[in-house]
Image (tube, rainbow, N blue to C red):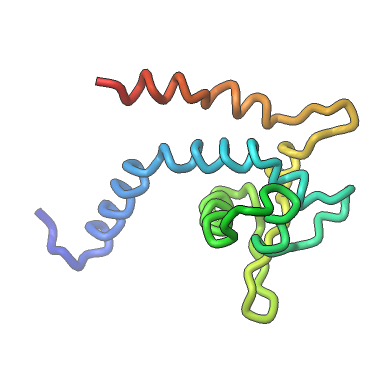
Length: 129
């Protein structure tokens, strides 16, 4: 086995951690779709970076901004959102990928596709004994 400090060993550990956490990405994506986060950020086409605390009143007033920020940061690392630092505050806007989740004039978005493929019953089947 390679030495603990080698770059390839570090990369291997990071790779296995990423693989082990792969369910967190579809779950985070499902959560932001259900909460209509993309629509809250899009705000009639403005796509102006806003913080999790600014998004929350638009989607779930009694929610926790810190938890929402965790979801946003996970999906930022996968190119759904773009993070902006403004006076020490993290703000988020939509990337081209994130814009596919915005509801169009006909009331449609790719959010429905996400929800279809990540239904709770599929996860329950997958994780049941």
